[in-house]
Image 1: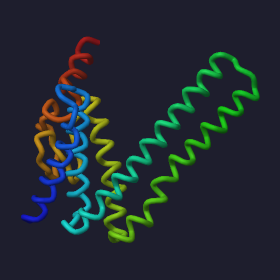
Image 2 (image 1 turned 90 degrees about the horizontal axis):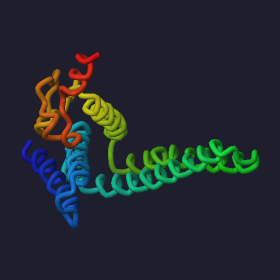
Image 3 (image 1 turned 90 degrees about the vertical axis):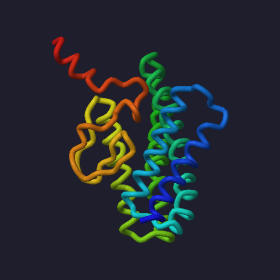
Image 4 (image 1 turned 45 degrees about the horizontal axis):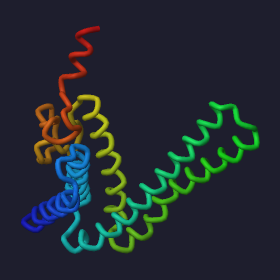
Amino acid sequence: MKNYVRIVLSAILFAFCLSADGQNNNPAADWMARMRSEKIAFLTSEMGLTPEEAQVFWPLYNKAEAEETAAFNETRKCFSALNEAVQQKKSQSEISRLLHEYTSAMTKSQGIQAKYVSQYEKILSAEKVAKLFLAEERFRNNQIMRLQGGAFNGGGNFNGGGNFNGGNNRGGNIRGFGFPGRNPNQNQEKADRL
């Protein structure tokens, strides 16, 4: 248990150190650093990484995540160009070219995770690799719930105060972690006005 706590704390400290370098008083950067730290802690816990596994896993995961980010940005750029071409009623040949660029970028983006599965399985058990993908999806869903003003639900929850729990977390500190200045009662206030 001591090693596990040490891994999580080290990962969080590492993420904060990276984000603090050259990003003073930037709310968006602060928020991203908090999200990154939460994600590292959440994935480490959900996967049950040992210190040795964490040492080899995180550099590989960071490499995969950098590739996914670059591919996502390329896909978004291609989508924007395609959308603009359709809106401006460009020629069919131009729209076709942009459509193929967009679908090619999407295919490349979707293939990155598959590419890394075999690399992850060289350093982790298949079960831990599966837990990675399940935990990533759960983490994304939790962030969406935060954005919508909800709280974390379901098994293996992570509340905004930095604690893991297994039950319904209606009391999580959504403001402390999550979106800057987010008021958890905002959605209810909107509903009351309607």
